[in-house]
Image (tube, rainbow, N blue to C red; front, side):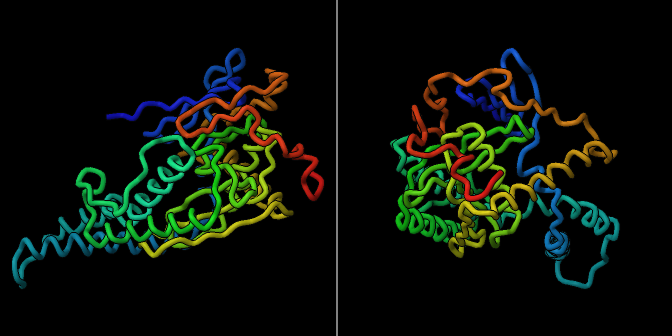
Length: 336
């Protein structure tokens, strides 16, 4: 069954973001200005950054797929010697180009821990009465391919998440709430915007082997969208929280608000330019240029008195998100 489109009011209700979970696409509507405007996602833009390590990983996964099929074949044929059906082997090689993706379940361990983290934060923020329970039990519907060892790894990762939450004072403001930059034409959804140990931060949970450099670009883009929609909010730090997909715990890195923010944001913009060039020149990806609306205030002025943040499933309603913060352009340690 197709998942329903998620619609979120943004910019004090002056615009709406329509997210299609199945296609993972974003469409923006600004009543009276534009009715349907597709915008690329931050993660899709950054995917154009070269990742040579993934080539070797994909090759290994493809070989593992073929080896698994060979094992199944040998089991069905009994003890060797036996004649090998080369046509069947050729079909394995063809399927391995994409089929290994369906067989790869390593990331599901981290995914379960990721969802545990989200629900734990929702509970601590008072957005739900249902606290996720430990230990995480095997569920044949949600994790049909899990082995007992994978369930144990998921519990170890969830415990590491709790240790991190207990070690830091975390106060969410936005949880998995879509953001949009009308001035540059991209969208994205941060896992967490709020206070960590008293500092206003943007944070994202990742399921991977380590903290990769492109994560800094993603967080810089998310920070840009936060301050574009909420000029009162000054993000002081960006956190990357990696839930290791093998269940070996957490890895955390962070960057404070310094010159690296502009460096990371400009590197993201380079990927954005490459994305635009790719759409114009690649025959297989060619499409209309991404529409950039520009500063939304030029079309629909901000309310003279900011109203409450639109209440969505992952949002804490605040009439003034960060009343004590200075304007973001005045608070930066260097000129824009």
